[in-house]
Structures are given as C-alpha cells and as structure tokens.
Length: 426
Image 1 (cartoon, one colour):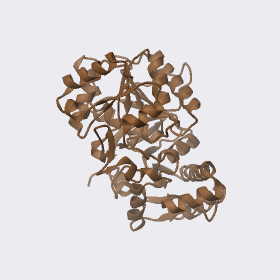
Image 2 (spheres, rainbow, N blue to C red):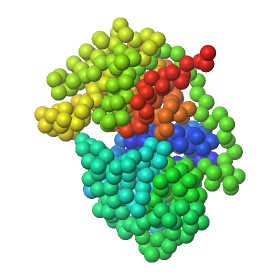
Image 3 (cartoon, helix red, strand yellow):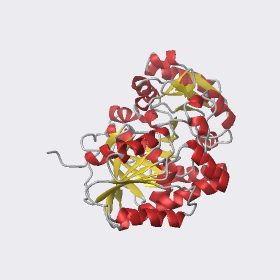
Image 4 (cartoon, rainbow, N blue to C red):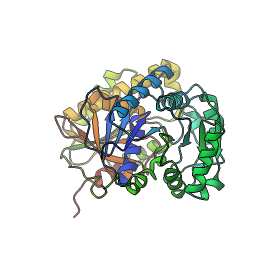
C-alpha cells in the first residue's frame, strides 16, 4: 500500500515514543535517525518516523532539517505527516515549534493544523488550552526549571501564538467530548476563519481518538505521541492498513545490559535512586571533573568488572542546583555538550565491551549516543512503559537493542523492568 504516515520528530526519544504509539495501533514502524540520504532505500513499513535533534537547535537549522525530512517523505509518497513535539511542549518563545510548523504547513500547501501535546497515560493533559503535568500546570511542574527550554506559561494558545506567524484558536473540552464529528466541524470553522492552528483539549484517550478520527484528511498534525492514537484506525477504515498482530516482534540479541542516563528530570532521578539499591550504579560528577574524556575513562574502568548477567547503571544526572552550578561554571551550552560527549563516549565503550541491551535516559543524551553509535534505523518493538518501547538497531554490524527514554517518562522501576521483560518466561 506504500507509506501511509510519516513523522518528523524534534528529538530521538520523542520519535521512539510516537513510533511506539503507531506500533500499538498495528502499524509496522521504522524510526530513521536524521534526514535520510537522497535515494536511500525505503524500509518495509507502514509508518516512518524521522528523528531529528532539532528541539534546541537554532531556529533556522531546525526549519531546514525539518523541511528536508518532509521532502524525503513526500518523495516516498507519504499520505499524512505529523510534526512530533514533546508532551511538555519544550520550546522557547523564539521557537522551535511554531517556526517549524509554519514551514511544514507552507510546504504542504495546507492552511490549518491541529496542535495537541496531550498524553493522559503519562499525566499530560490539555484543558481550556492549558497544559497540565499531573495535577500541576506546566509552569508549576518543574518544567519551569528546565535547563534548555524553561516552560513558564501553561497556556498553549499564548505559547503557540508567540512562536507562530499565524493566529491560534482553541478546540475546547466540550467540543472534543462531543466526539469526532463535532471536533471535525470545529477544525473546519477555525480554518474558514483563517486560523492557522487549533489547540485541542484532551484529558483522556477517548479525546485523542476523536481528534485522530477528525483529522483523517488533514495533511499535518502537530503534537505529542498521543495525537497519533486515532490515526491507524483511519487507514484501517479506508482499507489501506491490513497489518496488526506481530507489528512489535523483534529478535532479542544476547549480551550485557546497561543504562546510560543524562536526564535531570524528577522521573529519571527517582529511577536512578531505585536502581541504586538493586544493581551496580555509578553516579558521575561533571562539576567536580569537567572533562568528558576523563569521565568516560573512569566510568568504563568501573564497568569492566561489573558487566555480566545483571544490568549496570551509569548516570550523569543531577539535581537542579548542581546543573545550575555546572552551567554557571562552564556556560549552558558547554555544560550540555560536556555531559553529552561523556555519555556518548561511555555508551560507545560499553558496546565495544559486549553490551547489547542498552537503555538511554534523556532526549539530548539519546541523540548524542545514537549518533555516536552510528545508528541510522530502529525497528520498533514492545512497549516497556507508556511511551517507551524496546527497539532494534537495523543495519548494524552487531545486533543492538536500544530503549530511548524521555527523561520524564517511565515508572520508578523502569530500568529494572526494561531488562526483566527480555528474560524468557519461566
């Protein structure tokens, strides 16, 4: 049937999160790392997610990369496109969500797109245009302290309005609650009034399913992975999608297991804390040793005698005050690059030492590690926790299972659970 759905994701873990949603909907999905080369072979898949590292890139670079990804998907005959952003709408008033969405809409010749980052299963909901993380408004959830994209306004109509070149409206709870037909009429009304984007309320999966059905004929959707929840059913209804069972099947290569964590989110810090009591755990201190090569060398020397049947955890995650101190010492960009380079070196060294099952925590960390390992394609497998599946690196000389975890995702036992689910049933 050809390529049904294409997506452009602004970071690597977000791409995997979206791909996971599509696989759960019965779509065979491949994640491609970076803009594919012209003429590169098309994977056998119903959906392709192009993973970029554009969330915190300069706006012009993010736009250019996203347009290049769209051009490749269009040559592949894609029928519908998602611009995948974080479920906490990570960005600044300068972008990058609005400028990239504007550019994609223009390239697609489309006048309107719905926008919704909601993921109720992980506590991200939108009500009256305001984004909540659990019971807290976005700007009171800890995201206001994000080192790269501090989110200080929970009103997405305002946030998108500051970023975009077009007007922004709201599809409120009462409309989405009424179902797909009412939501579709709301989209049409906004479009007829010249409104470029509609922030869509969603506090349950039912709302996301209604959004997806209402968006069946729209060229572009902008949002978190939940925005795709209702899309596979659209393709199934029109006879384009026949696959279902087995969409998440992956081979399971044997080898050592490890976690590399760079996220400083509350969820990841809690996951490290629980793992510390169960498996060998090394917590690096970039503030005390601001040298990527030295940090990596020490971590790999520590790992040498500990690699075996049980996983190990190596983390450069830290509480906000230590992150602020490191940024104060080195500068924000240099501090981020230090941690990324150190963890990429560590991941490369672990794979060279026989690690074949690797969890990476944090979007920026995942991007750095995947690029260092030379991974270009990921086949999406079974879900570990909502939004995070195991994946298989395709085209590698050595089979490698990877789980790319957004910093905020996963239960406290995520690191232990991820490896336990790979063990054969007794």
